[in-house]
Length: 264
Figure (tube, rainbow, N blue to C red):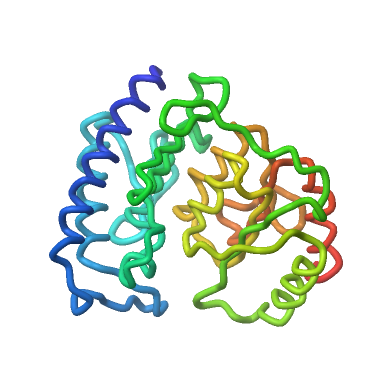
């Protein structure tokens, strides 16, 4: 399979969809916001973005199946699967905060082979695929940071929207990292948190309550950029296990040790 061709064509679809989102955002009003069953927000822009992405990817790989946040969130195991978040950071978009992105991963026989994250406001496009040795941002190679310890690190995190059953433990972890790192950032987009780990702007990221479309592309980018991704137990069930710990790899042992003490 020609992954370079697929990546180039998929990037075109993503950028064209992003151009449509930017145009729609100019005339969009907050009255168009809807709440889903889990209380998260969705807009007509999310729905239109997803439709354009799905239609575009079908033209690249006609036998594709889709796992996406809005209307394609059920699937059976299959050979070709696109995992799509049409807008990661919808709440930011709704409130006019400039941090939201399109996140796309492609899996072939359950193995991720392509990841694309495009942040609309900064015009930054992060790409990795099986036909390239690492990961890029706007065509330039990126890599994870060289931070050796938590004490040298800036972390990113997010807050659960629905599942608050682990909130007390989560706050304890937050306190621990507040004491032991340079600080924490909450961007409002898990995909961008992971992209920032991949390019070295953040040294690590953790969160729970996430779905595959939140993390599939970003986790792949982190690994291709030289980092490491696990679930809270240090295993690899981060795609469907709804918890993720990603870092430059160097701080991962210390990172995971905090979770083993507080949560596990």
